[in-house]
Amino acid sequence: MEKVYKLTKRQLNILEFIKKNGGASNQEIKNCLKETFEDISRITIVRDINLLLKNKLIDRKGKGRNVRYEEFIKSAVLAYFDVEEYFKKGPDERKLTFEYFNFRIFSQFKEIFTEEELKNLKTLNDGYKKRIKKLSPAILKKEFERLTIELSWKSSQIEGNTYSLIDTEILIKEHKEAEGHKKEEAIMILNHKKALDYILNKKSDFKKINLRKIENIQNLIVDNLGISKGIRKKLVGIVGTRYKPLDNEYQIKEALEKMIKIINNFKEPFSKALAAILMISYIQPFEDGNKRTARLLGDALLLAYGACPLSFRSVNETDYKKAVIIFYEQNSARFFKELFIQQFEFAIKNYFLLENQ
Image (tube, rainbow, N blue to C red; front, top):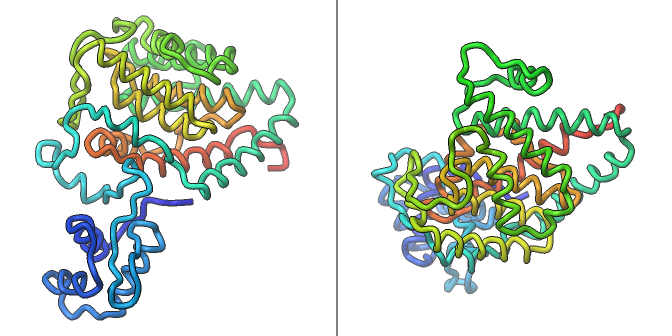
C-alpha cells in the first residue's frame, strides 16, 4: 500500500529542491544540502535519494553522469506535502495554490489509486463479501446497527458534536438524549441514522448517481436543524482555510454535474467513493452538511457495489480535517487517500466478522 511517508528534514529538503527546480542532478542535490547540513556523506545522500525513489516521490531520468531526478507525479492530485510542516503555518501564512475553486480539477481526477492499492482493496473486500454470505440475517442486522452507531458518532464528532460513543448508542437504540447537550446534537446524530437507513434500503440506486440522489441525502442530514435544503444560493466560508468555494448556484450545479460524470465513469467503487467524499467537500454545494453528506454518499457508493462501508471510527478528526484542507488549498488527495485506505482496512478488520474471527 502506498503511504504518505514522514520524511526527515534532510529528505524533505531534497524533495523540495527537486520540485522547485524542476529536477536536479546528484551534484546539485549535494551542493544544496551543503548549505544546510554540514559533513553530509555521499552514502547518506544516496540513501535519501533511494528512499524517495522507493516511495515514488521522485523519478530517475537518464543514465550515468547524466542522471537527473524529477518529482514523481502520476496524477496532479497526488502531489506530496509534509502534513506536519504544512500546518506549522496558519491559514493566513500558508501559500495556497488554489484560493478559489479550480475547474481543472475534473480533468486531473483520473487515476487516484495505484494498481497495487486497488488490488489490495479488492482482496480485502473479497474477504468481506465471503463473510457476509455466511452471517445470519440477525447478525448482519446487528452489525449494520453497530456500524450505523459508530459512523453517526464519528461523522458528527468531526463536525464538532460532543456526544460520546456510549451516549450515541443510547440515543439511537433507546431514543434517550444525553444530559448537558444541545438538542441539535441529538438531531445531527439521528439524521445520520435516517440517511444511512435510506441508503441501505436503496443500495442498488447508487450504482449511478445523480443530483437528486445527492440532495436526498443532504435533506435527511440537515432535517430539523433549521438549515436550507438543496443547492445554496449564497457564499459560504470554511473555518481554518482561505479557500473560497463557488459563490453562485449556476456554477455549483455545473461543478456537481461534472463531478457526477467523473464518479459514474469510474469502474470500481473505491475511486467513486473517494472522489465523492473529496469533491462534495470541495464544491460545498449546500448551505451546511456538506462533509456529512459527502461521507454518507461515499458509503452509498461502496454499498451499491458490494464493498464494505466505512465508519471512520478510528480516524483522528484533526488528521481528517487537515487532509481535506490540503485538498482545498493544493488539490492534493494524497493524504486523504491514505486515511481512506486505513479506514477501509479498519472496517474490514472490525465489522461483519465470523465467530471464529
